[in-house]
Length: 414
Image 1 (cartoon, one colour):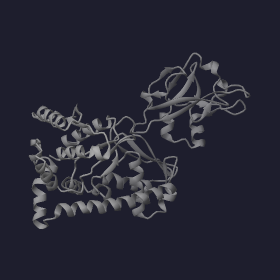
Image 2: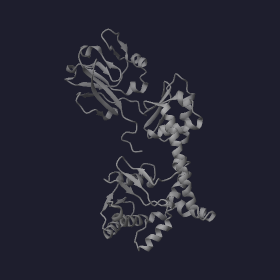
Image 3: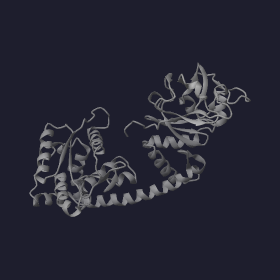
Image 4: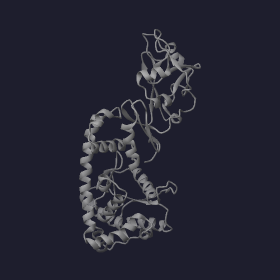
């Protein structure tokens, strides 16, 4: 009913406002009636003379997040593939109130309790709009009846095994027994929480300008913040890296950040990422510190190396590798121990460990940065330099390897 009202209403606005309208029906395939619903959507759109795209999706059953969450993920993935300025959704005031209550039961803060936004970016090209968010469902039902709209109901909406349905059919009536305007009142609280979340975000951004350098959270200025601002800034910093910690993990991160001995490198591993402390700063890395396999490569090869989770690029630079050494290709490998490097003819050979310690190269980078071998000899270490035996002459330009590790969440859906 909600989507039918939205589509009919938008169809009435096209001529006056001059926008192009089409519909997408996401076919989840979860109900035996799913094909019937798709056909109804197609017929309804034909009546309104609106193009309709039926998009089948595969809903994962084994993520541990529940069928509702998996269906939503599949649905929004379909939305992101649409070539349009906006996806317009039919969520209304009742949906907003239910979302706030769901998030309240999860222990969410102001950002979660602000529930759904009437406008947000879906990606760089498309926004999500919810123009009906301040209207109660009863107003939509009145519109549907007034225009004699026909719609179909999803039978799963009556199944109280789903949390949202249990709130809708059991909790909301109890709350309306206490306050007949409960729906509107709860939705109004979401607006207030949205304002609070916006203020907290602004404060976090101001604090992180002082505390973040090269994407690492510097602990000296961070410790000067009040405890509440520390938690707010840390939450936001983690969120910018796609990391949302459970409360116990978040508290443990704060504890080890300040309580661990200064000469240690403590880490909190969370799914595919890790938050590591090193030399007075917190860094986001991959959880695994295992290097990739030995690989033979050509220096013109594509930079992305999937097995190493990063990109190896070559730039022209002084003290780079003489191009003639790269003509037959090179080999990359991880550390095995005992490697050494001489960075200039007039400098002594030093162990790789000593070089890294002197330059403050973090331990995880020492383990996960590919070493460059030529003719079986260590020729270069990205971020460190090139062995003198392989460098170009002083008046020439050679090739310098640059390693950029992938972000821990690269290629992994949040």
